[in-house]
Image (tube, rainbow, N blue to C red):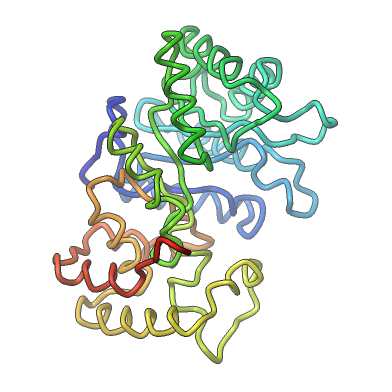
Length: 322
């Protein structure tokens, strides 16, 4: 696979990023290791995780996904410089209300725990999982800056930030000569566009931030597994019901026709739509099986024409008043 540059940071990454939210949740360790091996063999070098993955699952204390990745790298002798590791900090790790946030104290504690679980001496991209209104942004950025200077973190990024929060962070870094956010991880896909496109896209474009969208398949909705008269039993079914409307059913019909013409799957079309945008660095995808992984990987080979992309844009356009 060709590599892309993440923002202006110099991190060369594969056009697709393997997300690991499902590790220890809908994929046990054995399957997670198989997915990691297959992805690596296929040329995926970018792995995204978070310290809290997947704490919401039964008997999962958090840190499980990071630990699985760390064991995979060690047991398989994966050269550290062949992998771009991204993880996140912010969530509660179960040791009380103080064990969360973006304070200096929590960040310093969390990074050491993540490094230990990942069995590495540095994190390539350390991301604020979501904002912390209880902590001044300067405190957060000074902590990140110190980690960069110490060599424990190479670059920093933000996830789930509003445009004004992202601009505040960039301004604070510039004013105080601190490490700045070099990437944004937004919620972005064909049926969830306005959150990113309304303001965040312009910020990322103007300040050259890498864009790493999560949920590019809308929790499975854009794979076609949900239809007008078909709602399968799924761990994520409740989260996708908000997409069940006539506009989106028509979209799936349109994607069916396009996929047939491209000899592709719906998931590949949804990812190809993101990859056709030069602002997007790499979408984050998850896989619970080798079959799902192989399907997704095929998206890197799909090329939409300008007309095809425009037709999808028009089918999912949002209005300013929304």
